Amino acid sequence: MRGKIGLLLISPVLLLIIFFYGYPLFDLIRSSFFVTRAGVNEYVGLFNYQKVLSSSLFYQAVVNSLRWTGLSLAIQLSVPLILALALNQRFWGNSLARVLMLVPWIMPTVVVAIMLRWLMEPNVGLINHVLLALSIIREPIDFLGRTQSAFLTLVCANSWQFLPFGTLLILAGLQTIPRDVLEAAWVDGAGVWQRFRYIIFPLLGPVIGFVFFLAFVWNFNTLGLIWLTTQGGPLNTTLTLPVLIYRRAFRGSAMGEAAAMGSLASVALMIVGVFYFKYLWKRPT
Image (cartoon, rainbow, N blue to C red; front, side, top):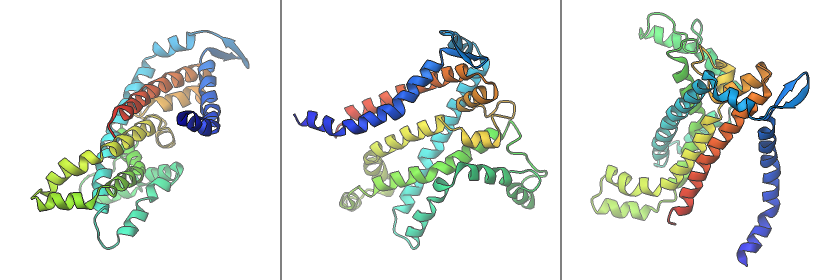
């Protein structure tokens, strides 16, 4: 009975979610079966999917997306954990540090992209100026224009923008750990590493899993930063799936192909989401 009442209470919100998220997804899948010619939608069945799955550029974009997501996750899980552990300590300026941590998160992506292009500019950019002054490099480097550096540069910038969100979530998890448990472990002779390994990290598991899931979706869907800086270049080095979808939809006027790629990406993310919520369901409380 309680379950039915609870379902009844949340039904208005569920209907809104279905309308605002379910309908666009339905329309995306529907569009993937059509080709627009002379302003008229023509049903073509699985033609768009066949064209996408036979394109080498699509597979290159998928591989780049997986590389992008994997490298970003490595940074966005390790660095926020270290920062959260530091911010959880009592020191002068702790509150100010927590406020300043929010700056990358609240900055619009357009501003981040403009700053990145200015900082990495080979002739007047601050990064090149500092590296040349310290004699680390002998000539300016076009970080965003070289295939060897563009990808990693954007990964670092993207991770920098996500750091506050992950840090504050992990910090909130740290502050739920009872201090008497840590003090008891300290009295029993447990060192810093032992307390982290056997007490702190296991208790942070659900929070880190949540950050992992959100970061995975965030990174896999990243478009703005890449498009505003390299647009997938140089030589498709930074061409991820969202960038390819945007390019085909608005530069190539191939809305059907873009919808097919978007549908495949949505299914992939749904599978990840199913596994994540299945893990939450089975996890003992």
